[in-house]
Amino acid sequence: MKFAENSTQSAEYLRQAIPLMVKYNIPPNPLNYALWYTYVSNKIPNLNYKIDQTLDTYGTCPTLLGEQLFREHVISDEITDSEEAQNQIIALTNTLNTQVDHAAKHTSDFGTVLEDSLRGLSETENQDKEITSIINRLAENTASISESTNLFQKQIAEAQAEIVSLKKELQKTKQDARVDPLTGLFNRRVFDSELEQIIGAPTHAEATLIMIDIDHFKKFNDEYGHLMGDKVLQYFGKLLKTECQKPILPVRFGGEEFAILMIGKHKNDGAKLAENLRQKIQAIRIKQKKSGKVISSITASFGISQRLPEETAEQMVDRADKALYHAKASGRNQVQTAS
Image (cartoon, rainbow, N blue to C red):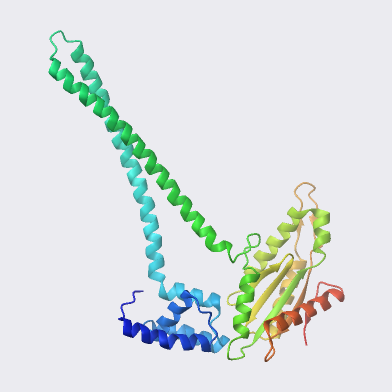
């Protein structure tokens, strides 16, 4: 999307956008400025419709949803252009590399022809010294050109490899800050940010929190080893991704503890989801490669809290934690809901 407003109009859009961001507890970062600038300009009606729907549902525009709307509506063209440009650069370096290969071969062939011709002349009894001198200089220059071409060919190959490497590193860096590398889930940092934004919204939209803890996980690690423990955590991550469809947010809270934030959902919805997960976790079967032994003793406990009026994020988490503790104290492998 292109912004072509003059300074007066731009300032007016910004004056309209900032109060809305404050009203709906929108974090003041550059992405949100651009999103809400576009919103008040009303240039993309479908974006405005989606934001209005989001505000009605959540009382704010959660960060992850805001980023999604920004990518889909504000910079969709730029993302496509950027990816195409990267692909074109890589294709260009591939083409240059091929062309330099051909040039190097032709230069080498030309040098061979000159050398053969010079050798033939030197064997002639009545050779012309001036012609021989010229050909000698040509042969020297050809050798120099060949060397330069080979060096350029090497530099092109190195640049091509660096472009590919930088592209991979950029993609990796974008994910590392917010994604847990073992499970592929968002991390505690994202959870805290999303929950604080929901709690701080001007309207009290329903929100339910599920805290999950793998039962006897330390004992499991001690008995079967950390590699098997990592497999269990990876399975949890895969299961939560599959069962928690957007906008439900599953995260790795820390260690063997996970959390699920359900915005706009009642605690009864949380209980249904938790029970479904409990049953699927209980059915996990993992086979040890060395011994062939099947491990089937994996269970998890769940604690649920629903947002209360005027409650802080810490209080909501604390009530879910207490419900989780109650589930563990009552025998584990069960779901408990805070009153």
